Length: 69
Image 1 (cartoon, helix red, strand yellow):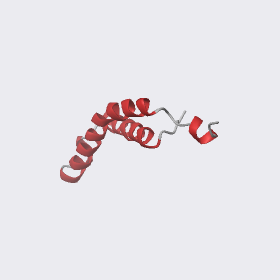
Image 2 (cartoon, one colour; image 1 turned 90 degrees about the horizontal axis):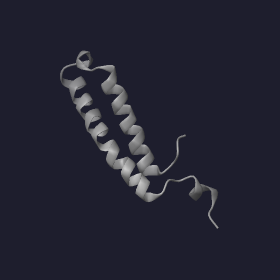
Image 3 (cartoon, helix red, strand yellow; image 1 turned 60 degrees about the vertical axis):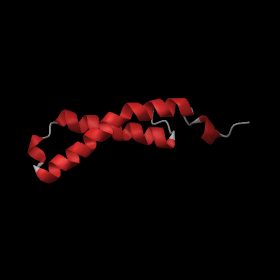
């Protein structure tokens, strides 16, 4: 019998796909941090920030396997 904790986790193959799909967003997040350090925040658009946050959430889902919604 499965416990309630195992039911709420995503299958491993889905977690791997989400992690791979989130990698470009993580790279963008790194690039944004470097840009803020060297050039300031004025060169960053809102779309880039949102895309990076989505990547961080995707990586969190891939690592923990928890469903956020």
